[in-house]
Image (tube, rainbow, N blue to C red; front, side, top):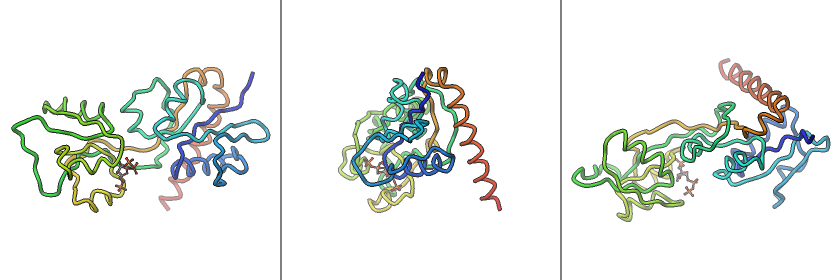
Length: 217
Ligand code: PRP
């Protein structure tokens, strides 16, 4: 049986960081960080096979068994609730899911709050718990434009450095949750490649513990 671990990496800075960690742990794959358009990389010993995928699609590949493991933000797991196992909090890619709006402006409470977001489920759940009536406007990017153009009262979106908000005269109104990258596994993969995935997870956990110790110094 094929015991190669198929790993879905999110394209971009987070994925590169995760790859470098895995390389240090003995799962290197030559040429993977070269700027090519190639999407699949396999090491010579066929221990691992990497796929570069759109960050928001990682959990889809893993849930459907096209990849055995992957790395995905907690925001995606909470929004789409994929049927996967969450193995480890990698602590990378830290950011916050926030309600943000125009600086020094408080939206009217006389009517439903209009919210622009990519994260429909997270926004609905948050406001349902608060008992606030809302209207969702689903967008796919550049969410910050919505309150500026009067399309919404506020946005529910990810804030990392805060510079996108600042440069657009917006501010955080409320914090909803903290986000970081998670190492996940597909349910079938976890069963059939349990030993291989277990070894990889242990190595990751030891690597994280060593880093934490180093940071404490
Ligand atoms: C995300 C998010 C914010 C921005 C926050 O957008 O939607 O726009 O990053 O980062 P900051 O606090 O460091 O400025 P992304 O770059 O993913 O693009 P998007 O507009 O397509 O959502």
